[in-house]
Image (cartoon, rainbow, N blue to C red; front, side, top):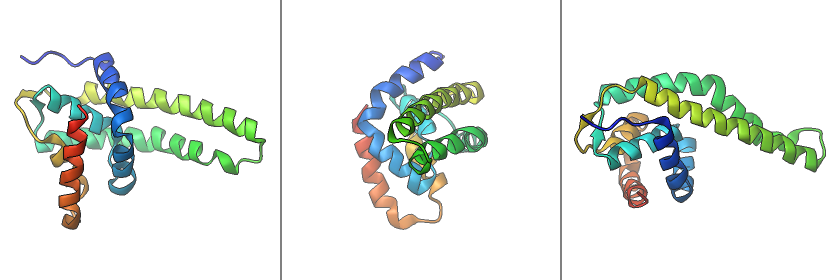
Length: 158
């Protein structure tokens, strides 16, 4: 029986890994619509040699996307647009920091939701990153070699 994944374990893993893989995760977020928290969970599962089926992964992603679309994405967009607010630069910085802190709280909540909705895991190594990115990138096979190389780079970070 696999050891239970706690929200704190996943968050600590994410805090350690994310700085090393931030540019790639944000690129996939912007270009493919990937959810960074789901990417980080999949990295953790791969490291622990745990797996989900393609259907389970798709369902988990859909549940997270609903929450993210309602809360995290609008807050992120608001934070990115603080420069257009008719306030002083110091006020813009204060606003941006407050929104960033709220966004981090939502990111942590997303990870908790992922674990709450995660189905039972099988104890086996599985290429979860490829599976997730293929689900996001179904209409574009031209980038498959680039994605494969990027996945290798990401895996080398953990």
